[in-house]
Length: 213
Image (cartoon, rainbow, N blue to C red; front, side, top):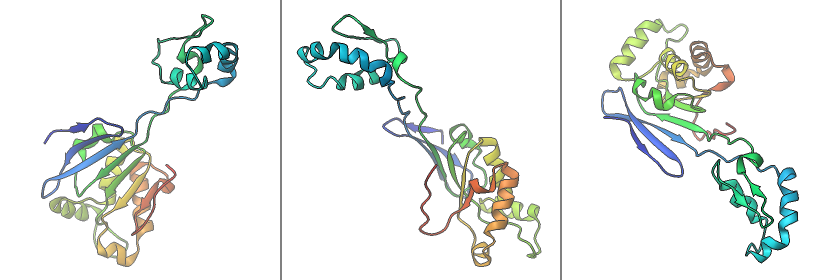
């Protein structure tokens, strides 16, 4: 399966994940937000042309601002008095939309790397881990999880570091972790491997609302 993209108001792309059955990861991106208009510079020109703009059919000359904001760099808006308004002179820098990666069950999300890179939030499974006092080693847990198509904290952290994601939301935890509530241990290990601060690694819980990103 190749990378599939759909272009629309929100761009949505997909790519295959490594698992025991066909699984797909998705990346959703918001469109760029156009920069704000510098009204301190533009308002005097609007005021100077107000009456003529009304005569020209602009019942609400303030709508001229919206028209100029949507114009492409290099285009001009000709005012009635002959003033040429270039949008790039009055418009601030565009702001990139947010990028969210939602990955399903996987032991290797490498094929999604080009899509996920730089994501503001990545949702990634973290099925099991070597926990204090349980008699397992990190290597043995990693091997077992790869055979079952799932991921450990180290595996998640390594991919997050490669993809340079900004925040991680961990889900698909095993019952052994949930019962013992070893969330702090999972957070620490993922944060250490990924290089992210602890505050940017969140273990998902039922009915959790994740915002402010």
